[in-house]
Each structure stands twice: as structure tokens, then as C-alpha cells.
Image (tube, rainbow, N blue to C red; front, side, top):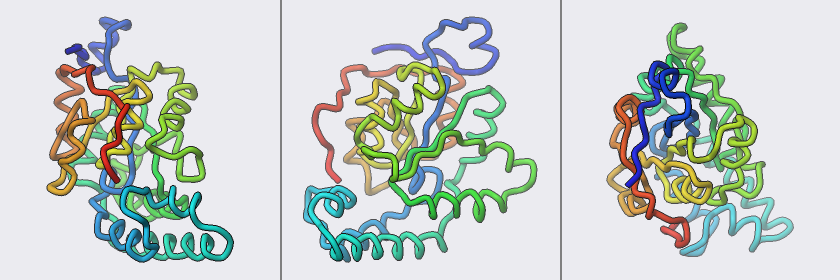
Length: 237
């Protein structure tokens, strides 16, 4: 086990070389927002994604021409329907307040479309009380146009380079095994937002919470990390 020290502004100032979290990177659906599992299940069913394959992987590598275009069209349709139900994850504002107050940088890595990302920013976050809007300073925001997508660590390593922060000082937060594998393979801390239907992914998480605001306690007080967790094997789709 390795101990990560508190990530508060005060603690970092007192010990600038401490092992702690200096940047938090979020998945979108099911992490920044409430779970969209039913839409993801519908997407796989409509496109006939084979068991064991990821949706985008199947569409981009197994389909061609009009069939691929039709699959992408159906994906956008389902994502657009999901936007109508998009809400911020309970406890997110509390976490964002902590990150903002302690100068911890934030970014987003999602396999969703830019259209869905813009909806989150312009139609969900924008409706927050004025005092909360300034908390959501995600930069960079990488949608599925950044290749390769999760579970590849490339997107998280890109954030690491842009920020100039070592991967081991980043936390990747998500609700799916691919979010966790992205984090582990980059050498970062992986944090699982747990739901009743995603417990199978716990084996790839350094940190597990049932409400996203619970991360405040970990970042405030420090936490122990099992560094034996690896990204060598898959955890399902």
C-alpha cells in the first residue's frame, strides 16, 4: 500500500513535493451526470453490438460505408434522447467547490459526442445558481473524436502533458471499467463511482465511493492505494 497525502491547498503549500492528487479527470455519463445505463443498453441492442465488444470499437472496426453511417446516426439519436434526462450527479457541486477552493485542476474525458458535452455545459451546468457556475472549469475536454478512446490511457496522458502534472498525481473518476483501466494504465489513481450494476469493476479501482462528494474526504484526509492493481486484463464492457 502507498499513502497519498491530503490534497488541500494548505497541505500542498506546506509540503510541495508530497505525493497527492493535483488534478481530477472525470468521465461524463454516470459520473458528472446521473447514470445513463438504460440508454447505453439500448444503444448496444439497436446496433447489435456483439457481446465482449465495445460499441464504438464495433462500429469503427466492424462496420463499413452506409452501415457504419447508419450506426453513428442511431448513436446520436439515442444520445440526443438521453440529453433530455441529463442531470448533475448528486454531490457533484460539493466536490467541485472543494476542487476549486484548493486549486485542483479538472478535465473531462468522455466517449460521448461533442453535442452531448455542449448540452451539459450550456443547458445543465448553465442552469446552476450563479455562485456555482464558476466551479465548472474543465480544461481540456476530450470527447470521442480524440483517438484512441478509453480504455487506452492516451487521453489521460495527454491531459497530464497539457497540465505538466505527472500521471501519478492525477485521479481518473468514472463509473465504468474502461474509465478505471484508462487511469490504471496511465499510472494514475482510478476512482469508481459505484452503482448497483457496476460493482464488477471494483477490482480496477484504487478508490470506491457511492456518492461523488465522498471523494472530498479522500482528498482532504489522504488515502491508501493498493498499487498491485494492474490494467493487464479487461473487466468487461
